[in-house]
Image (cartoon, rainbow, N blue to C red; front, side):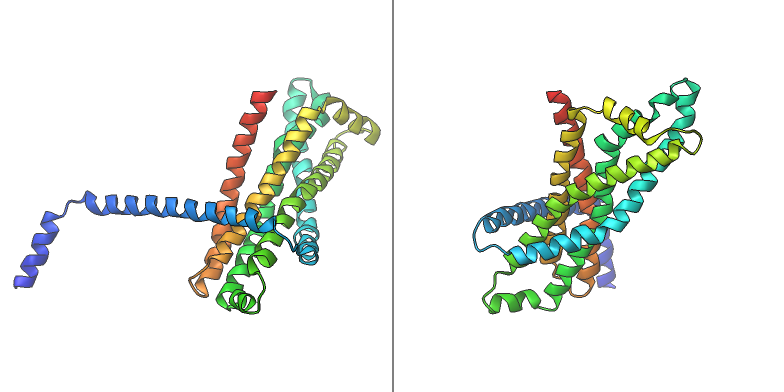
Length: 275
């Protein structure tokens, strides 16, 4: 009876908002701890990447796995992206009698924004989750600890090579996706018309400027770096056993996709300031 009275008295004394306030404080603390750990991980990456010896053979292997293995998915996505955007934009331009602007409008939309962002999101879903799951499984099975015992530097061999490969492979995939998307747009234009390839790509090239191409190309390096770094960070610091493998893959995709949108927003603001 006395125990029940103590519990009831404690429940009366506690305010309803105390639990929610504690949850908010804990969530805020976890957020700042995560940002701090990611910043340390990034600093460690640059510190380790600049010191010899360099793992060129592993870098080439990871570039093949990250770049070449992602090509089919990126190519299909790029073709459908150009085809659908062309088909959806044609009726609106036809209402204003501006159907001739279709090739240039699609080209600017894809090259400046849609192509890099969509390709980076596909890249985050495939490569980011794969890196996170792979490193998490290596952590769970103690392969990383075995490398340290054998005298290797697992951070340089595992993390640095994957981040560098992701940084340089994503721009290549974006260029390929843009080219395939333009071919898809050419197919879409000819579904209800008859436009030669020479005329189509001439209209595309005439409207494109260097300010459309270079900012969109440069930001893809940051997209690839963010995806590779976050995937490696989530997998390398997984400590939840077998459950951590799935959690690392999932969080790598979510946080990597969010980082892509943040970087893209910053890139657009910087581009608008200098143009």
